Image (cartoon, rainbow, N blue to C red; front, side, top):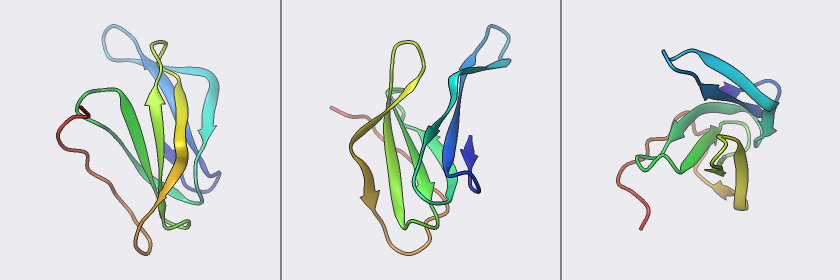
Length: 91
């Protein structure tokens, strides 16, 4: 979940039945003003559109479900990105 005012992204595990449990730590740092989050179709990566930073934060999803920032941690965009859509898969 994107947390626009605290500049981070919440991370959860999905339990049987679809309920969520916060992971530890409960959040990971994002750019300024993360507005939306998407998971790529392969289920290996998460991206957050940072509306105040004019960039996208990018993370790998670890086997335990926690997010690890990729390098570079952010990629520049145009002004005020509010959403991101991932299509296809990483080769």
